[in-house]
Length: 118
Image (cartoon, rainbow, N blue to C red; front, side, top):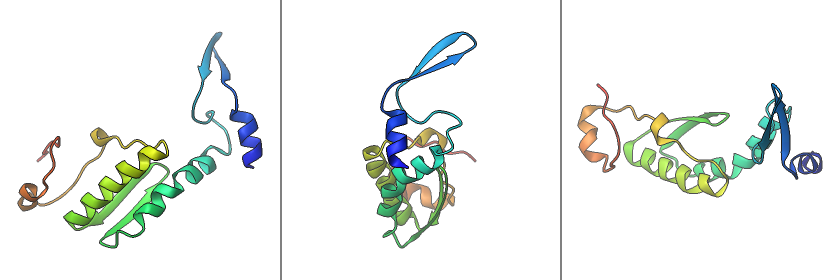
């Protein structure tokens, strides 16, 4: 499997759309049957690094993650995803992420750059 994918993605892909050419230099080609498999293999080290955070339960669907746990555990979980993800090309989009918690926990958060929505 891997040999076939290396041969397929070794060079720049030339995609033709409505008479125009688009150069694709990273990622998998839309519609590639093995794209999800390759993504799962590439992100497996990130998921494995999160297994030891016992105070958090997590669920993943492709590149979307959900976690529940205590605040300290969630902060550790988040930091680990950001730190490990970068190594494997998984970049967390904080702007598309949210944390749901009781108002009494806001001062304990100790983070900056977040927006409170009521």
